[in-house]
Length: 132
Image (cartoon, rainbow, N blue to C red):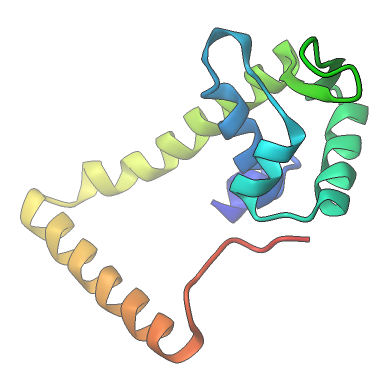
C-alpha cells in the first residue's frame, strides 16, 4: 500500500480522507469537524491537510448553507478520479495473492498475518496508520 500511495503522491491520511468523502453519497461532501473526529485529527492538523489537498485540487471548501460560519468539504472530480485510480491500482497489486494462492493457502496466510498482528499489538499497542 505504501508503494501505491507513493506512486500517486498520497499519504495514509490523504488516502483515508479521499475514501471518506467518496463514500458520502452522490454529493461527496462532509464537514471538517466530522472528518477530523473520524480521522482522530486535531482541528489544526485537519486544517493543514485540507489546505494541502485543496491546493492540489483534490477537495474544495464550500460555505455551509446551514451555518454561515462553517464550511463543507467537497471532493472534486480530480479527487474522486485519484481515489478511484488509487483503489484500482492497489486492487490489481493485491490480485496477485488471489491468482497465486489457493483458497486453503489464502486462509492460512490470513491466519498467520492475524497472529503476527495480534502479537505486534500485544507488545506495541494497536496499529494505526500514521497521523501528522
